[in-house]
Length: 106
Image (cartoon, rainbow, N blue to C red):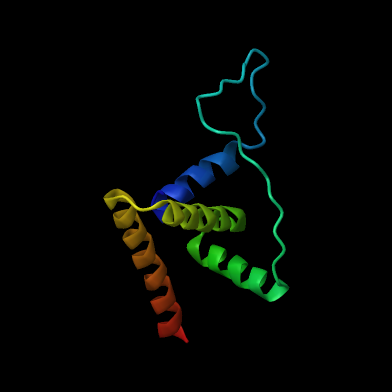
């Protein structure tokens, strides 16, 4: 998983170009990536509000934050490589910094 800054850059690019139409001669190309699947999940309203707040603080869309959490948990279920463990520590460090910043302000 990328760093929060990587996520923000990719999301910003996606958001900035989402309304642009593709040229008429553009053909889709599958590059071996698996298809995405949309899954609806029920959450208590207060929990979703907290998630939205976390996403806002991280500067990422709520759906991207949730997707990252789910993929992270899935990777943990599969077993962890050294690189995955390092990425996890980096993301947890960033998360803890955000928590500390909130705590320092409160």
